[in-house]
Amino acid sequence: MKSTITLSASYQLEFWAQGPGSIRIVRDDDLLWQVPAFSSHPDFFRYHHREVGVVTLEWDRSEAILWAYGYDPQTVTETGITIFEFGAEGLALRTGPEIDARLRSDPARPVMHFSPIRQWMNDPNGLCKIGETWHIFYQFHPAGTDWGPMHWGHAVSTDLFNWTHLPVFLHPEQNLWRLGATGGAFSGNAFEDRDGSRMFFYTERLPAYDLFKGYREVQKLARPGRGLLHATSVETVIAVRPEADGVDHDFRDPKVWWDEGARAYRMALGSALFGDPAVLLYGSDNLIDWSYLGPIYRAPAHYRENGARAVECPDFFPLGDKWVMLMAFVGYTEPATGRHNLSFALVGEFKDDAFVPDTGELQVLDFGTDFYAMQTFRAGERQVAFAWLFNWEDRKPAGSPYSGEMSLPREISLDSTGRLLMRPSAELQNAWRADPLVREADGSFKLNDAPFELFITGNLEGSRVAATERDALAFEIVVTGGRVSVRLPQDDGRIRYEAECALAADLRIIYDRGIIEIFADNGAICGTRRSYTNIAPDKIEIMSSARFILSERQAV
Ligand code: FRU
Image (tube, rainbow, N blue to C red; front, side, top):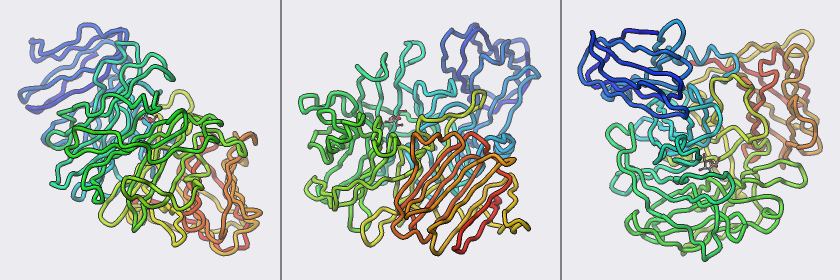
C-alpha cells in the first residue's frame, strides 16, 4: 500500500510496529527512511523529517503498525497529534475534531470521560495545571489493549473535558518487549519547585520476568523539554529500597512536595513494611539525594491477612489545616463484601515528619471500586483529582480499540467532621449543558443515547433507580436501611457494592455509556462502576418519595 502526504520541515512520525511487515518513506525516487523488516516483538520507531515536502509512505501489512501518529513540534500543543491509520484502503490521517468525531462514533466509548485514542491506559499521572492548560499524563501501553511495558501518554485541555492528544511523553528505559519483560515508566506525580521549575517524579520498574516477585523498582526524576512534549533528562534518584527495614518488594509511585514545616523536600512512596501495606517517607534538600525517614503509615494486620500486598499510588497533601492521605490497597479483599483493591482516605495532622490520623478508621474512597489510583493536584484554591475507572474484575469486550477511562474531574474537600468529600468539578457545568427530561405517561423516562444526570434530594430511604436497555437491566441503585447499593447485570451477589449513608438526603448519579458515578451525602459517599453490558439504556424508572431532577447532558 502507498500514500502520498506533505510533511512540514520538522515533522515527526512516531509508531510502534511488530512484524512481519515493513515500511518505507520515499521522495521522488529517493529512499529517505525505512524499516526493512519489523521484528517479532513490538519496537518503537521515530522518523524525523528535515525539509518541507511531499513524501510517499509505502507499507505492506497495515496490521503490523500497532499505533502511529505524527506531529510538528512547533504546533502540536495547539493542534494535537495527527493519528495515522494504516488500512487496506490506504492511509487515513485525523487531527483534532476529526479524532473527536472518530472517538464519538464508537457506541461503546463514553463521551464525557477521558479515554486514550487507542490501546491500554491505566493510572492518571503527572496531573497539573500550567497557566490555563490542564495536563493529564497516564500509564499507557502503546503496543496493545492489555497492560504491558509502561509509557506515559499525554493530553491537554483548557476546560477539563475536551482533550487534545499529545505525543507519548515518557518511554521505558529499555525495550522491554525485546527483553520479553514487563515494567517501564510507572506512576508518578508532577512537581513544581519554588522557583517555578517543573519536573516529574516516577517509578521505573526495571525489567521484570515475573509479575509478583523479583522485580526492582527505582525512583526517577524526569525534566521536560520544550513545550512539555517529551521527558528530555531522566535520572535515578532512589536506586535501592530499604530492605533492612522490612521493605522487600513493592516500592513505588512517588509523590513529592516542598514541606514548609521541615524546610526541605519530602516524598511519599507506596510500599509494604514486613508485608503490611505502608507509606514511606523520604527527605531531600536538593531533589536528587534522598534519605529514608521511616514509614508514615502502616496498615493493621487485617489488610495483609486479607490479601493486601502493598499501598499503590499514595497521595499526601495539605487541605485546609489538615493533611490527607490517599491509598490504594492492591490485592486486598474485604471479607464482609468481597470487594477488592479498595482505596482509602485518612485525614489528620502531619508534624515533625509524623502523620497522626484523626481516627484510625479508614474512609472508603469509592464503594463501587471501579475507581483506582486516584491522583490529586493543586489548582489555585482547589484540589482536583482523576482516577482510573477499573478494578480488574471486568474488562472491555475483545475487539475494542482501547481500554481504560478516567473518572470525571473531581474536587476534593473536607466537611466539618473531617470526612473527605468528592464532587464533580465545577467545569462540568460549563462544558455540558443539562436539559431536563420529561416523564412519560407510565411514569418512566425515555433515554436517548446521551449522558444523563439524576439529582435526588429529600428523604432517600426506599428510593430505587433502575435503568434498562430493551427491558434488560443496565443498572440499579437502591437506598434502603440507610445503605446505598449499586447492581449491574453481571453481578451475581458474590461481591456487594454498597455503603452506609449517614444522611441519605442527597444522591447524584452521572451516567455515560456504561460509567456510573454516584455521589451521596454531599460527596462523602461515592461509588463508581464501569459496566460493559447494556450500556445504552433506553428507559429509566425512578421510584422515590424525594424530589428529583433528571437531565440529559449535551456538550456545549
Ligand atoms: C496501579 C499501578 C501502580 C503502578 C502502575 C503500573 O494501578 O500498579 O502502582 O505504578 O499501576 O502501571
